[in-house]
Image (cartoon, rainbow, N blue to C red):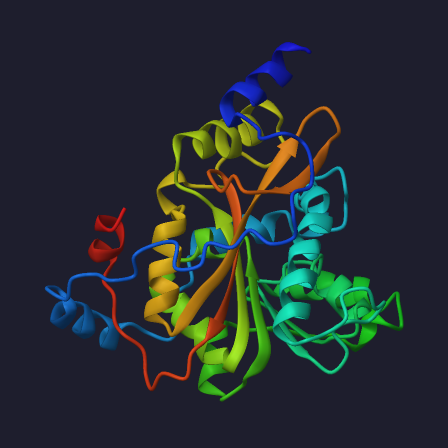
Length: 312
């Protein structure tokens, strides 16, 4: 084992490189109760927030600068290319269970309307379409959307994907809803995670499904997702991630709960440097993905940024 491999093993303390059972349920895993002492202040702040509150201009600029590389498997998005099969395995498993679909079918998502929020170049949207879903992909970076459309048009199956340069908030204003809403590796790049999750919830039909993946705010994630990925392995451009913008599983569960989404299942992704593969794991200390269901609540509760970070 070379020095780099020893570093990654030490930083991440990988769990055994085996694919664990399909279901890593954390039913009622985290407390979703929070104090309401700051509810009045947070409500006022929420009302004054614009419909574009979840956007960060500097984050949009970062991805616009490397948009041409979305489909270069050895380029800046190499981690997503490597992680995609594992993400899709979790999505197939949870959505088939949720919507009573056959996971062994070639097109298990037939008849489902899915939206890929922050679709980038379409790395997730295309396989979802191949699995039979009616897919809408949205991204706030126009160049990303153009790249996604060009690539999707190569295949008649994926050419049916509807790509739009817009935001989740704008679609909410238009009254759009979907059977399942997916936002993978997006929430760590938005300015207001709570408002963003409210938009995801509003786009999800009652009893529909919402899937969010992100990076845990832990020392292990700093070592692997920033130091290793950006400065040693050079998988990502330096500055791609800001550690302070990561959310812990508890924080994500809380803000989703406040947005009428109950987290039902959570799993981690771990990277095995010996095989170059990402695997599903019970270890959610770095990369993790959460599946939740939309409640039939009337309206959403407000949550302030200070309340969010005081929860961890």
